[in-house]
Length: 477
Image (cartoon, rainbow, N blue to C red; front, side):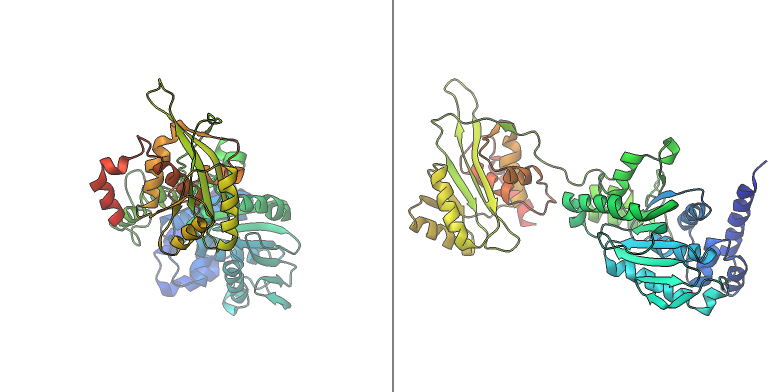
């Protein structure tokens, strides 16, 4: 015999199906009669254009479990533009508050502006007579109705804030995080991901009342994003962990579209072709495979023999966000060896204006005992080589016309097994080098090292010559 809650859920699900087939003229009446108990009835009542395809009904069922106290930790993952925010972030918290105007709610998103847009809509809707027909006791206090923080006369409160923004007030019975990551650049940044994690643990979580609920609605990016980290560290409910996970891929195992009326299989395959497989799997299938595919790992360290002659390669910058990067090293092969080793004896990178760079490079040139300094000299960079030459350094201008990523792969990746790093290589230089990927924001260190190796004339790194036509085609695209 099913218990009362299961029977109630069955009745509500059947009612929702009937409601979806009702004429628009009848939905207001249905919503007014059933909106207090049924989230989708309320959603249709508040928004006459609201759509409830199957995946939205699944989300509604999960949200109603939170409202009834059957779930306290919920992660919802689904693709962009599939209706997740309208129901979960905007309508549900307001319905939750209407059912109990004493509740404390925190709504957060990737920035304060987006969160405030949500809480302002909720406040304005709460003040509408249309809303009060269903929830007459949920009234906004007129002396506390700021768009980012407003209260009900019953003691409830709604706060909107951005990730890493201040969350003031009395805490939360419901804390909702809607898309903590805005851009790929943020998703690729370990610093940003760590900041989001620290904010979740030290700020948001500490505001939660005993028995309170947390809902995270987001599209996946990487295995180490907020959802991935929580699942990894706290586990899924079905396996004895904390989190209930509702994962809704754009295409199911049989190739059927999640929302065919909006995005059919053909449209999704076009998106897939445009994004590339890794982004498709993360953003649309909710199966992130690390988007940052690092090219370099487990560097080998060794000091060079004394007779190794070293050269240097400088990739200069003129201020702003770019960094100047200098790599120093040499190639050595023992007399009886078939192959040789590349020794990187120095590596530095820095921000700063070009005037300061001249002094720094001159000092490093002499400290590292550089023979010839190769300077990347495109356009304005030619002046850098001329000034360093004027200071008595042996300098050669090197134009850089090849695709940067291909040059890094061609010279650094191919030769990685035989590269040895001296302990004199700066730690920051090393960290940024190892973090390099095709999608990485910073590439100065890897590019500088590629230039160094290219000018050693080391065999094995000259793939571009052996496949000149192919690489020329790629770089012209």
